[in-house]
Image: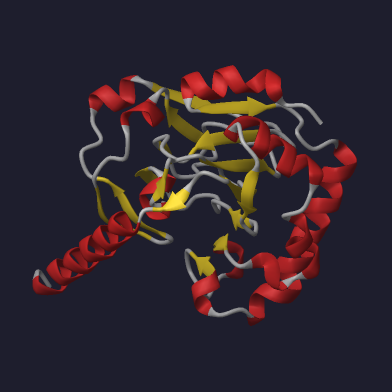
Length: 251
């Protein structure tokens, strides 16, 4: 599988869309196993691995982590298609493909994703890391599609601050009109993949639809040159501690 035709756009913009990354058969198989995992496995996982908008309403499930506890999803990190796409865009062999995570936006909720950069959490230098974000159902403006700030991966990692958003504890604290002016809204069909650089700023709005969920599966691919910056990790942890302490002091 050759995805090299997407490399130039990825390098320029910090993101790219791969239409029909999964065909109908592969997508159906993946969705069947996602449904099985949510039905049979999620009720027994720790609370830190499954986030609900309202835990008393199972239909408001919005994030699932550590899906590698299931053999099907543990094996997905070795999928030739996912690895080939990651390697083609990172531009070097992969050191790791992280286990998949599931994201959704329940309809008619205030669930949003604040502007952020994945590598603020990863602390990798050089930032040769990307996320493959696969739409499991159609994604559009109404149900909370992705918005990317074009070219923002070239500007380094911005300062983040604590947020009140479940599952996204940190967001860019000075996101403003100049960022919004560079935004690109990305609408996807089921089976399409949006791939973004670890330093690319992205966000989503709430799902305003009456009945449409917005499920997606994401995996992170790290190139061999990307290494943990221990000083950045320590600074990140200290920043989080200070922010949490400030919240407690402020009531």
